[in-house]
Image (tube, rainbow, N blue to C red):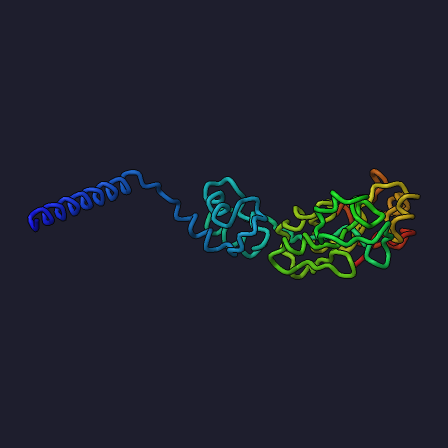
Length: 264
């Protein structure tokens, strides 16, 4: 009996030793070499894993940068400082990194936006696609104010104030999570330095806009006619700004009869 136990123990030990040696040799033989720059880049990244770079996380971006598949300034959260560190690791020029911030193209808060009915139900912007009129607000393009963007932001940079989402540009890292979360497509990334912004997203004609909101763009074109650098145009009844041309003079905001263009 004891003899059998000893034999069994020896067999188990021998099998374990064989498997261990096999796995060790296989690990060495089939090991995938990792570019040491990848780890250095990963250590330089902020580690938020927000996905704003277009990859699943910081490790994905680090691997892509090391392979030359992503730019060294590909991290919107790290900005210029991180880009400089990574460019040093990769031995390339970082290029200019323009700081961006999210902007909600709507002023239709509880005081300015008109409503068709009182809504009581699930507080979720996406759910409004399944309720009459796409939600209680008369404007089908405006902010619904139920905070999908707030829940998506990992930096506490966006909050709903008086029924409308508002961005704290000092906290915003331009990761784009709120942009993706808004079912109305109301949020866009604009230059941090931008002083003039069209705070409306409605493509309805003027008379319809007037019935829905006190500060909506009516597509009159006065802003475009008065812009000294031709940086603003009206397409589909909505004004838009070309920030590569805009000088920030504020003439368009001054001339806008509905104050749909804001400065500051």
